[in-house]
Image (tube, rainbow, N blue to C red):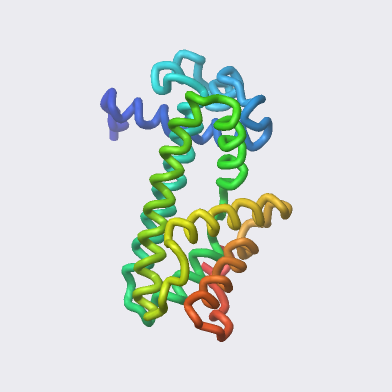
Amino acid sequence: MRPVRLTRAQQQAVTRERLLAAAERVIDRHGFGGASIDLISAEAGYSKGAIYSNFESKEAVFLELLSLYMERDMAELERIVGLDPERLPAALTDWLANMDAGRDCPLLATELQLQARRSPAFAERYYALQEKQLVTLAGALERYFEAVSAPLAMDPLDLAASLTALAHGLSLQRPQRERGAANPAGMVIDGLLNRLARRDGPSPPPRTVADK
């Protein structure tokens, strides 16, 4: 059987996916400052022209990568808060335990936060992306507290920002966890949400990647 020939649009999508995966590996090794266009293109097995035909700049590559992380996380979180109230707490515990499995989103977010402090033009795009995530997370938190019949004791946007900072900060304070291990930051957040929702009993044991 002949291999299926990809359309131009499909080929471009594959190229973008490979470039983003390469950028993730490069920034993990070298940080934002050391993650050059040359390194990213070499890591992906392309020329520099492949990056510039898909992205306007190095900053655009990493903003796209962070946007993909955020969209995937928020889509899954919105699915969870739409579950029946009986299933929701355990599902959220599992999700938090597996948060950022296989990727280092907190490191990427921190690198981009630092770049936003240095570059006003970059900051405008970065903070718009961050605000979009916080609004989505705040909405999910409102639905969570409504589903578990608990009052939300603070502004949902403030809570969303606090939990995001907590997740990133705790993740960066500790060595990168082994594959399949529970996310310590996620478990702290789970305990905090339980207390805020006045569910003082222990959460059921989370199912991590190793259990699935």
